[in-house]
Image 1 (tube, one colour):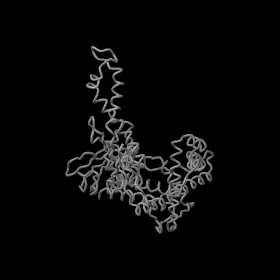
Image 2 (cartoon, rainbow, N blue to C red):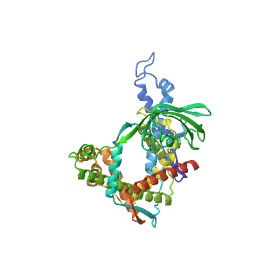
Image 3 (spheres, rainbow, N blue to C red):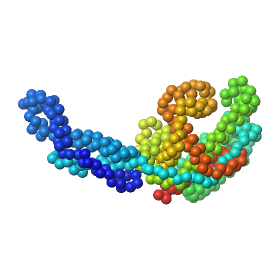
Image 4 (tube, rainbow, N blue to C red):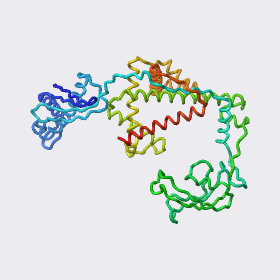
Length: 450
């Protein structure tokens, strides 16, 4: 076997492989002899069909099978001998495939990039410092009360925060438009779930009132045929309802897992959960800054096969998130929606793998168990969660990957200048959300410019 490797890009290789004709012919003959043992043809007993007849009828099929098998086997041998690390499957095509001639075929493949990590030394990282206050806890309790509030009909004018039950019909240039009507719709004033200006004009309305509302659709409205258009909505108000907040009593507290309804335990549990949530927000914000810096100084070629794998995974996640069903064909979702973000994820994954390798980072079963125990604290039976994870190799692998990523980020963080910034609980969560939106927007912008 003769092998030549051509570098066509930093991550693409074109391998030309030649196999002597005698090897192919010998393998084809052996295949035909095996075939002849089971051939049934009129006028011949099984196993006694002349080889000339067998070759004429089955020769091409036998050669196709042999060539296909030889190409796969020799490709694997060639990349092993050449020390190539493929990323995904190759494209293999024969270039010379004639009886009596040496077989020649070409395999085009992508390999994992060779990475020489550039340091993020000197990068400025902002790290929020958050202390959950008693006022934060009380605000969270108020939020929980609102989430569990009941709506009671009132004989009063609608105010901000009230719920109105309405019928409405929208018109543009005196013509009804599709999607512009509903009956018995419940709308919370101030929820900003309707077109700007719609909800505000319902303040002061009472049950039985009929109102004509003038609004303008935003220029960036999702339905392009309505964007920027002026519209009139005829609205009939059926009822006005107001929230009745539950008392923070034992019955209310028991809903959140504090079985004895103790007030102090309830507040302590809320503070514990908020502290954990704040810590996660801080870690995520710091991690994102580190990863952004790592990507910025390490522009590396990314194998398209890995990007496609990540894209397919993101499609499946999206289908699951939007409840499209297990039978939904995710190939219907366009790659363009996911590719840029998938490329960024693959780039980060390759760089972190290099950080892990360079620093010989690892996580044993004790570390995995400790991490699972930490994650399990928020569940009712933590020990059961730990046992389940530790008995499942796939889940253990996922946790190990998360630990190694944390260790890699911590190692990178040693190269940076960390500036602590005091924030409230709400500010920390808002900053983390803003960071996530900025990263998503940046990826969308990169995709649009591409």
